[in-house]
Image (cartoon, rainbow, N blue to C red; front, side):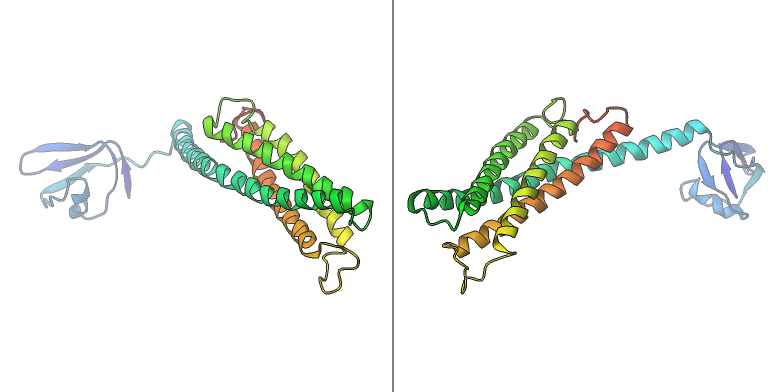
Length: 240
């Protein structure tokens, strides 16, 4: 049986009793109390009184749940602080690659006028804008989060949610537009009039990579915003 506080044991050699002050498991045999007596098994101990176990009080339940919540919150916060620079670093890295490809194509179209039509030119320019938007703003958010992950409006869950939602819409439109323009991807053995087959295929591929990364970041921020709202901070609360 389990005895919680107030279990008394009699030492028959010395005629004194011992009161158990902590929670312990007591068996039917006297030698089972060696856990309480720190390994010293004394057969001359006898049970005097062991009250029935008391149910946990609401206060103890609250303390237990509070400790679990605190540990979970610290663990999640630690993962957010580690994952934020990695995810935003990937957005910046692939954004720079996309920026280089789209800038090169835009320059070629401006100099040689060898774009198939104005649709190709305009959609490449749109990807150039999306790349600049992502690289610049993601760099700002990464630096601000590195400087202070909490206490700033710009690093809050709401601020990240607005930025990533806009970025997600931009990349959804851009990646879809380029995919439709290329018919899902060009066969470079038969590029169908497009002058820069390899570059355009790369443009499409990296556009979808940016979309995937933005989607992952957006989902994480939405979950963190819900958590912040539930704990009473509102979606303006800290992301970490």
